[in-house]
Image (cartoon, rainbow, N blue to C red; front, side, top):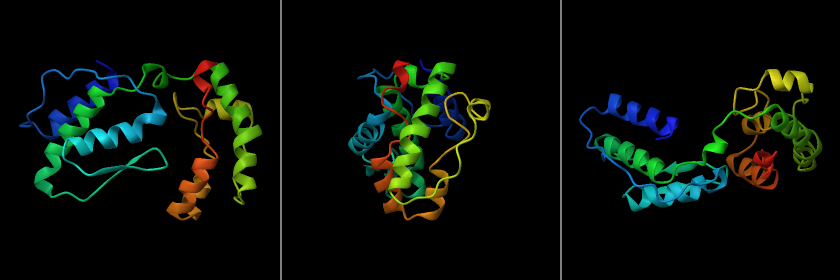
Length: 172
């Protein structure tokens, strides 16, 4: 079982010790990050919880009564175990992948965001970019100022036009 899934199971058991959790969950298929929102929202909806894929890659839920929180948490765990994220996407990036991401930010992402009329903070040096990296995520985010200063609709529009990661990052 994947470390993230094990951690979520441990958290689920700690938060809801009386929850009825399936002893074994069969993996249906391994997914890529760009499938997450669609696959999970469908899985959760099939489990009885209204969930919608969001353009930023996340999921939005309808409000639920407190007494359904446990069942929703079990459904989240079950969906995660049924559709685990491909492990290559959860591993720390290599030095060459970080450098490739840096070049993508500099040459494609920042010009795209600026072309859409947004001001973004300056890209740090490659050395600082590498130093700020937290395993799988950079410490620098060109979307940070956009998320704070734009409507949800504008953020969705821009993040759809200017992806935060190049599709081929994991091929490097």
